[in-house]
Image (cartoon, rainbow, N blue to C red):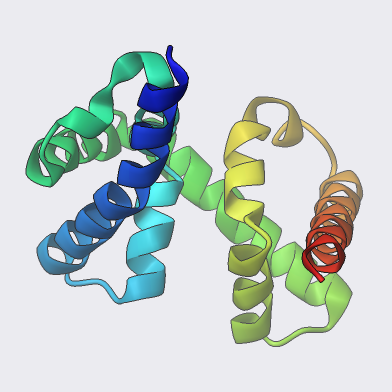
Length: 154
């Protein structure tokens, strides 16, 4: 890929994401944060980021249709993942002594749902203590990473 093409894709991506979030908000009747979460936790989003797919050439409605096919494709798997999310939220909430709303905020802020989805096959076979410890380590690593980025921007 040429340097010019990469720059064009980088420049277009925020606009494509804006369009996608607007479509998700409208079609699913979601707020901004929920719409971002809905899209960012999908394989469709991961595919959009891949340079070789050129998915960003498609209309937002076309990408949304792909997203909905994905979300509706395997309800049993989605139900398992949803149950795992609920389990992890509740266990982390209990251990951290956070209210439910704050726990959810932390999970969303530090992209814990994506971490849980990507690590589901291994994590869901582990014990409660191990899972909660891994979530804590992941959040700690995310905080450290974000802090280093903030410091490098100064």
